[in-house]
Image 1 (cartoon, rainbow, N blue to C red):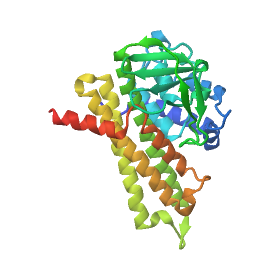
Image 2: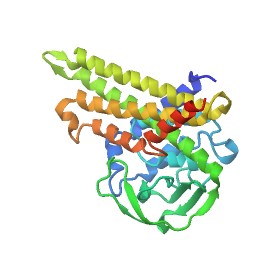
Image 3: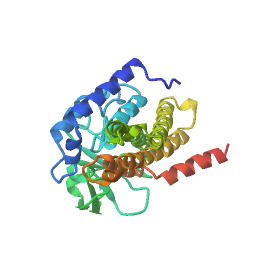
Image 4: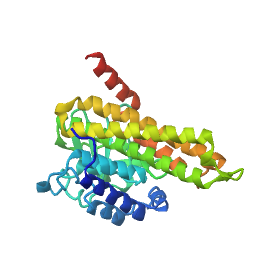
Length: 324
């Protein structure tokens, strides 16, 4: 078990980070939330990098790397606020034809919890993946009806409330559902970890450039402590997420359930708290639509609910330690 990224992994992250900076500038990220804003050609470019098939065997059209490599990629995507059904596409790659290449866009819903059937990115997707205790089902989006939420929490992530859900074609049983829930949760946590890093970078850059009383505000002791705390939360989250990724690849080293739950707890806290700090560092203007700080916070709120809540993760950790 090695938690230190290799040179190849560092190069992979550098490639994804560079692509995201070049092709997913913040104006492009914002546009994805508009009614016709999903850019399929740009999605296909992202897929062409092997993004969704990182951990899929080569004989199934993937890159053939380990799951920890997919975790690192999602962390980089999270830092850049790259929009779209990234987790759904990664889970479906190698299972649904066309997803790896980006020609088929999937969305996903976990119906394990009570409440309305709210699906993210439904209006721009081709197929809907339905995860429940019995397994995984597949449904063409055109066969389901729904109403778009006028003002979703994250303006870059459209949400649709399904009003009917026809019977889906079963593509996997309970074991696949369990695997997707674990991996989906971890990929979401990886994006949360990246999110916490991205908001910290935004806050630091602003603190270095903004001056008050003839000095950069980043030189003030109070802000130094806030930003240092953000950095520490990010490092804790990153370590937890990486450890969980390695555990998925090497389950003999420990409990996957506990590792994934721990990653969710640390990454969700890091993302939400760091985004709040970013808003605070920007002062009064940090609450405005034009400043990007709120995008990190709202994306964090969305990601922390995917494949289980923070409370669910806390219960898993508590139960596992109680039985030791």
